[in-house]
Image 1 (cartoon, rainbow, N blue to C red):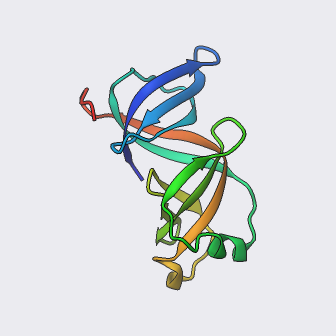
Image 2 (image 1 turned 90 degrees about the vertical axis):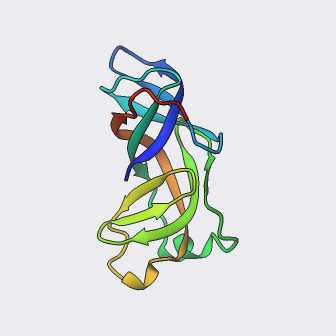
Length: 138
């Protein structure tokens, strides 16, 4: 899933990898690890993400978002987040976390969970793919 985001900061670990900080249309900032991509500050991109995730019990995924939040919240660790959102589709499971839309794998094949609010843990958010938005700013 592509997310339209503006780059506000890039910290290189070496010439090929680092941490990029994005800003959403609503002004929320969050960071993701990247490898091999190039970014320009204040330029908007269509970004898809992948993530390294912690194993979570099924009951926790479906019970820890009773308030129906849709956001990612920073957790300790580089590019690590607690994510609260809603399942949009399955096969693979895609969730809208308010700040980003993210494919979270093969959590289930049960289509009755579409529309359910969930809790998810992202150990490391990674940039999977980027497309420049023709130098437009958000």
